[in-house]
Image 1 (cartoon, rainbow, N blue to C red):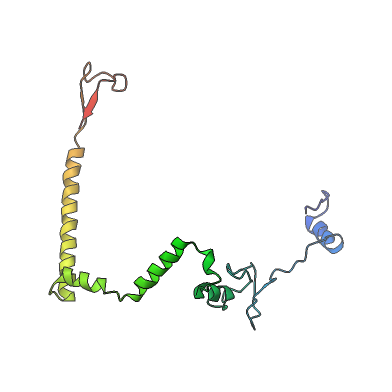
Image 2: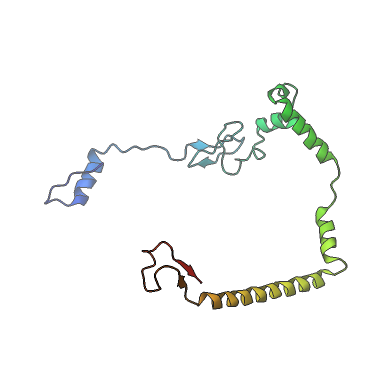
Length: 177
C-alpha cells in the first residue's frame, strides 16, 4: 500500500512511522504445505499433491511409489470390482499385452548388430564407421562447392520486351538461373 509523504519530510521517516503505527501487513505463514507421509515433518512452499490419492507431500515423497499410495495398489491388481469400468475393447487389449509380455522376446539389437557387422570386431566396425562418415563429409563438401559455383551466376531475364524493362511490371517474364 502506498504511503503519502509530504515534500519536506524524508520518505524513510514516513514509511517507518507507517509501519510502526498503522500498517496492517498480512503476516501469513509461507510454509503451510506439510508432507502427509508418516514421520515426515518437511514443509514445502507450494503444494505438491498426488494425482491419485490427492494428499500433499514433500518433494522426496511426491511419487506414488515413494509414499505407498493406496491408489496404485488398487489399480495394479485389477480386481473384479473395477473390471466393469473398462470396456470390452480395453479388457481385450490388456489381455493381449499380458500375453505378449509373457512370450520371451529375442534380442533384436543383437541380431541387427550381427547382421551389420558380420564377422568384424568392435574396433574394426568403429574404424569402418569413421571412414564412411569422413567419406560422406567429403562428398557433402564437394557437392556444396559445386552448388556454390552455379549460384554465382546471375539470373538471366527471358521473354517480354527486353532485358532493360522492369521485371515486376511485366507478367510474362521469367528468370533463368
